[in-house]
Every structure is written in C-alpha cells, then in structure tokens.
Image 1 (cartoon, rainbow, N blue to C red):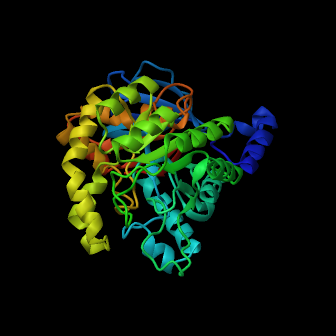
Image 2 (cartoon, rainbow, N blue to C red; image 1 turned 180 degrees about the vertical axis):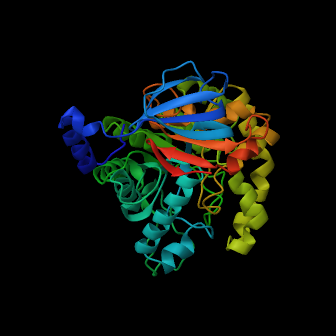
Image 3 (cartoon, rainbow, N blue to C red; image 1 turned 90 degrees about the horizontal axis):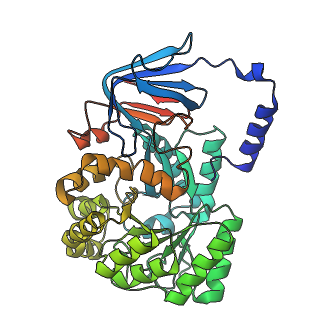
Length: 432
C-alpha cells in the first residue's frame, strides 16, 4: 500500500522519531452533522460526532455517546450528511475531452498533460474524491503528480498511478490511422508477445507504477478498431499478470468485449475497466475470481450527447450509440448477480469535476440502491486499491478523509454531485 513517495516516507519516519511533545500541538476536531453514512453495510448514524486527532479518526458515535477531547474545535455541519471521501478508480487526470487523445498527443507536449493533471487533481479533490487510480498516463506524469501530492506541494487526491498503459500494435492504446512515416508519440507502451510484455510490465514498475493498465480489447475512442476486438491472447495476458504479480503490482484490464474480458479474468487481473458487454460467462468468472468491475457508465452518455461539440469523431459517437443500451443491461445483470463493483468514471472523456454523474445512472437506470452505489465508491474502492485498512469508511483509527453534502443522499443520490465539505487526512480542503 502506497500513500507516500519514498522521500515523503522518510520524512514521516523522522517525524515519528521526534519526542511526543513535538507532535502534540494539533487541536482535536469534532465534526457534528445530521447523519453519518459509514461506508460499509452499517446503517446510517443520526446526529453523529466524529473526533479527529491529527490525520486520523479517533472516535465515532451518536452525539453524547463518545468522549470529546478538551479544547476540541467543533465543525458544525448541521443539516448535512457526512460520508467517507470517495474513490474514483478510473481517471486520466492529464486528459481532456476530445478525440481519444490523438490530437492532444500530436499537437501538445507532456508538459501540457502534466499541467492539466495538476489542475484536474485540485478539481477532483474539491468534488469529494479524495482517492483516485490514474489508470494510464504518458511520460510518468501521474507518478510525479502522486509524489507531489504526497509531499504537499500541490493539492489533490491520494493517487495510485499506472504510468504508461500497455497496449498492442494497432489496438486501443496505439495511435492509429496516421501516415506511417509520421512519428506518433502515443500514450501507451506498445508491446506484443510474451517477452515484450514481460519487459513492459517491469519497465512500468521500475518507473513508479502502482498498478499496470493493459488494453485487452478495442475501444470507443480509438480509431481503426472495434469494441468487439480482442487485443491480446490469453497467453499474453497471463504473462502480464504473472510478471506484475511477481512485482506485487495488480493489473487492471480495459475490456469491452466478452472474449477479451473473460481471458483477462482467467489470467488473474484485479479489475476489468468498463466491462461494457460482459456476458454470463464473464459474470460467472468474475464472481469465481473475485474480480472487480470498474464500470465508467456516464462516459457513453457524454460522447453521445456532447461528443461532437467537444471534438469526438463520428466513428466514436456511433460506437457509443451502438453499445449504450447494452452497457446498462449487462452491467446491471453483473451487479445484481453479485459481481463486485468499484466506482470509476473515465474522467477526461468528459470534463473533470463531473465524476459523481455515475451515481444517478446506477440508481435510476440500473436499480442499484443509493447505499450500494455509495459503497462502490467507498469501501469497495478502498478494497480494490488495497487501502481498506486506512480508508473507505468512517471508523476509529482510519485516516480522516471525510466529505459532506447538504441533505440526505439516500433520498437523492445526485446530492453527491454537489459536495459542500471535504477533509483529507484531517485537513479541511473545502467547507460550506
């Protein structure tokens, strides 16, 4: 589990070595609200108090049921519901809406991408997403951003970085359709065959990857392929997973098509990104292997409704239209069959800051309860990222990543699109 870069971890270790008195200057905080959604299967707590000392939660309970430290500062969130900081397990902080990255990569530098990422990290945090998995970025800017956030240099959520994705020649992660004599910078490490793929995985981990992203199928925003295409054989996918496992690094597989998805699950990936056309065999396999689906639902709506005005090419809009209805049907079938979901959005396909849009679709169109939808972005997200010991719920001893909305999101899930209060690690980032 990684929350800090090595230099930041060293600083933290030195801090622990200081005399206790040097660490005792922080004033305890007490949050009071109308209700608390813990983030687990536990029922909401009415009129809760949450005590925070330093970066961690030290007590949780109804008002009057827990001791309050002397001199504590009270944060009054009357009329609000407090929840754990949310997880978005599929973002591209350096990306912007458009044609899937082709124009951005051909006309802009990695410096543009890195600056987008800094701006989008702040937006994402202020929208209540205190932890994200950046599932693909060029030139390692997401690993650098992770380290800058950990060191307190720039504001942003906790980040797991995939660095470059790994993609096949001519596949979703490649830049296709250009004159072959024109050098294309790409946004993935293109590798084919077992040996190249093993090296690609080792290379990503060498340069800071917390998770490996592999594009196992074709995509919606890519040129020259189909969402039904399978990009890698089972043997190639197994080589990726086996190599990553040796390096204690999980794998997330972009997959829309059943064939690609099922081979990726059999190979042992931790998550399927998108999972759009999952079939009954895929549902069975995901349950058997404990594989998460990271569904990214709203992306198709944006492409269909706003894609043309944002530079999305016609062929991608047609792809989205062809699979949108099936997406809802198949993902709903998987969820209700018991497949584990972790909330993820593919932010960058749409403007960063709209990350909470998927909640309303899950509840209104997929018959998922508001509490279950919230759990995909709290304890489930924490489990997928391996951070459940410290995050994902509001409980004693956990890191104080806490958000609040006005009203009750169990009555209106779209309240999560208007987060009023954000705390990360005991520090208030945004307040009403």
